[in-house]
Image 1 (cartoon, rainbow, N blue to C red):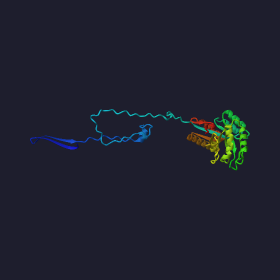
Image 2 (cartoon, one colour):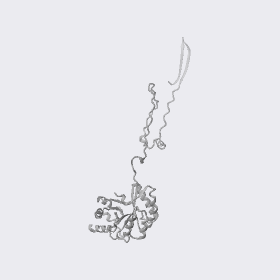
Image 3 (cartoon, rainbow, N blue to C red):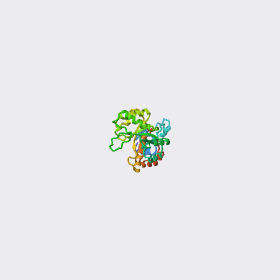
Image 4 (tube, rainbow, N blue to C red):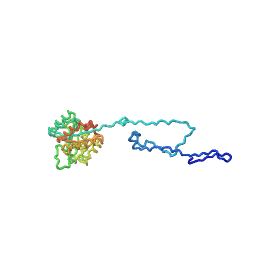
Length: 314
């Protein structure tokens, strides 16, 4: 009912009682405030569950009418599932790993001494037929450095000085394999090789195959220095069944300390994004050793492990 109501009681035509009533409608129940999901997430109402897991119940404008005969039942408590931290969900996160190769070893003794003072988790790549190559390989191995042959390969560059023992695409299988074996024989501690220059040679899968046959016989790995983006060395090594990987960042194309530090930062970011990365620096660049001496000790606190390059092979 709504509005004013007049009631009269008459007896024998006379009004004995008169009542005037005013019926006021009950105020409608207050509607619940809408839930702002963004605020709820920020305030922790939804925990770490995604919004899709929250059930939204539509409400009617009219209040529900109670059933007088129905027993009053207390609502069941809401069960909120516990959120397990990611580290407890059975998935183990792999540690970010970083490898750095120092190329062009075997020449100036002062350069060698500077590098051998660095962290022995570095990998040293030594050119064949160099005045201090054998001593560098032996001393480095004794200190715990990983030793590679830095195998000289043919380049497109007309200004790059050829190194004794370079393999060329014009050579036949016998000569390429002879030079490769001769170079490897100089350093008994060698566990793999990477190419020195080689922009032309690493484009030739057939000639690379001759080198890789030797590596397979000796149970050695191959790292593509990736001196040019037309290299097919990584793919060819994989087809040959060799453990292999490719360089990600050159540290010291520019020799000033600021540039090397910037490249080192790029290497670290690459490792974090990919899970691992390989950088290459050089013996003959003093600022490279200077930057590495400062930055390598910082890797541990950043959650990055410095490893020998052989640990990043596929």
